[in-house]
Image (cartoon, rainbow, N blue to C red; front, side, top):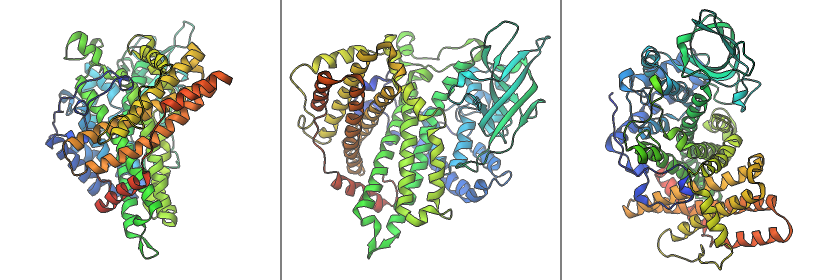
Length: 615
């Protein structure tokens, strides 16, 4: 199958600018904007999931030898493992929206999506972005076809989230022909089935110091590399997770990936995309789990009627559907922005004109959006993984006793969901990234955050000119008012925290996390609202369901934002100052709640009628 597509032109936006600027519905990409070819690709991926992945579920989960590798090679035959690889190296060279689509629709079984995601993302893209011409021609065609599966080896038992503190060492041989690696890696996805490993180590020599953090390409079977036994895991049991050990492992010097001492650029840049794709996989997994929930609720009868008619079951279904809708909306909005950049960051496009991204010597194109959309990628990782956790938990609740036994899918979904909050940097780390990234961009003058904060801080001392409870009229006006209020709350809380802690804010992890949660709710609600407005303008049949889900998100998002802001203020002030700040927060958070019972029933009834997520 030949896969090629183009993306509808959507205006590029600076990373994090959603917090400071307003967007029109036409400026954001949504799933409803997919081209016919993209829809065909999505349908092919969904068919592959239905006809190939799900029938092999039991064999995958029980690690039947060769089954997972065979599925990967079948996916390769359809081009699914070649999407992000340039055509000249056996790939498809496609846009990121199509890449997200395929991951989305293949993510029906977490063990497979973990294997697939690690292979096409963190294991392959470092080579695409940083590899030499020789390295690309040697390895990318094999990765594109899944003849070889890839693995990414950064984590160590003693470092965990402190990735820069790795102990694996590499020394250059006296003749300069090889690097000699010694050390261990832990929790390596695809470790037992990979043919090529991207391994991080510190190059040390006679000079004192910690060494140069660097990356190496190591082939399976290289003398001195040992693959440990498969880990027995809580979830994703069918995926391969093994430790690696290196004892005087000789790696050709030509297999140094990128520049010596620049391995942290590779490690952290590729993790941005890994976080994005993990959010995508959570959307696909949650859609599948919600489908199980809805069908079970329709079929299960109690007290003479379907349990899908009970209000508290409807609340569970609608809560899950609304969270999924928000995550899905953010995913495709973000992919649209990345594609609109053409591989560059928006500021690069403005200063140099649209075209090819910057190159890093002979090592190829380094996309500008890798850092530009770091905050959006971390938000998607946090929101998507926690959304999936809610869906898995509610699936067990709806299925009750059946949800607790292995014979039914809820038990597996529940176990599988937990790892998503650990993968690609824990959610705690990613919360610190969200706030820290915004603050650093502001300090560098790349994001006018400080000016926006000053404007809000000045405005809150004046009589209120805005009321989210009344304000504008028309469809979704209440939700638009909630969004405006949440943006003001986020800037006000950030301003108070910055005044209190200044440069020491980064050491206040609890405050940083609360600020990140408010920012994430802003991005979620705005993405959902703009998509709902776009559907309403196009008079789509599903627009009322989207509007109802947006209404639910506005109420829950406002409650979370106000609660998080209260914690921030209480950590920053006390006495009269705290009471004054809380009074300002109450004014900013004035909001007329919706009849969420009615909205919940409307969404759940749409789901029950469609027998699936309704969009």
